[in-house]
Image 1 (cartoon, rainbow, N blue to C red):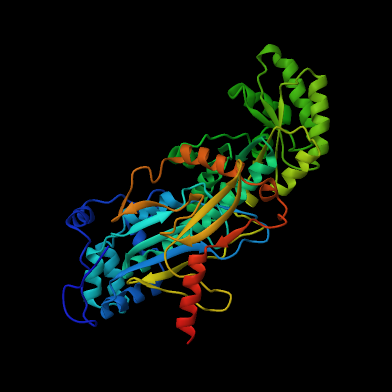
Image 2 (tube, helix red, strand yellow; image 1 turned 180 degrees about the horizontal axis):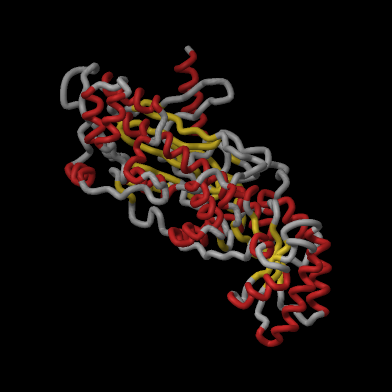
Length: 482
């Protein structure tokens, strides 16, 4: 990829020339709006102000050469042994639809910070860069590039905030949800958390991220429509409270939804189970209730007693579903205690990643105009140049990763793959949620058991730097410090 100025010296305001006539044609074509954001084409303004001020400065200085930025996580939270990459589909939707609307430019002009020439540049701007990324559902570790953008410097800078926003949150939730699914040990897991997630967009993306890593279904109807995720639900306490008595509520609900799940803990949990048993006797062969739901109290003890009562009543086919402030640790306890629970509704703690609510991730410049770049700040040192991640296997299990230069020849599987060229995604870059989910399942199954566990592995998963990358790092360190 190359760009050139159309006028003047290094201080001139000029527009970068696109890579090719094909790129120009594609840039002028109608672009899709980002999926699921509720932003439409206004998404270009979902950025930090300094991205725009830097872009204007780059333009003034004639700094329009290709830049390479990479997104990575500096270190894993103490509560995480691995992370699961997510959010790529939204990033590519955004990049394909990237543009500033006339009303966006009017707003920026009113701020009084931007020159007319820069606003004219933004009016014509489309993303024309290349992207490499980990496939959604890929397991990765600290220090490994998740996504790489190669584009003219102003373009690559302007898209930073949105890319971080989407990849950070979806990766955060996918990584938490993967632990929940692992802890459930094959039992059903349902996403119940929409009402407490941090906004509408988060509610949609959390449902998608959870399904990607193995959550079975969601209560979020819009997520079901948008992403094709199975939707499910039970009933709320308010339904029981709205009726004169609990048994009457169960009768009415089962009449409308015969194969329902009945919530039994509104008043007294075991009395609620007795009401289910009484309803079964009343309905006889017409009784088709699938499960009862426990939402509070000693879930293991209540599940055992409820199971005994249902079995003695001849209702062995009625399963037990549990919810109520669950996370992977509580679920693991219930599974270890052999509680007779067939499924879990998990909400707040999963979609907010309550025990590790953020990742220390960054989007950093690693090369500009063919020159490797490296940040030397204390505790925030970066590695220069374009890279690749090589994964090595021992039998069916992953054995370790090597981060090397992008054009190295290493053994193992190369994880970063091209997903966009000249502003357009490549075929199969986003194969769909069902295929990504199947791929993620294989990724998780390939992890060593100690890495997949909820406790820290000893020793930690091995991620090494190649000799070539170490040499490039050490050379640049000498150049920058002498």
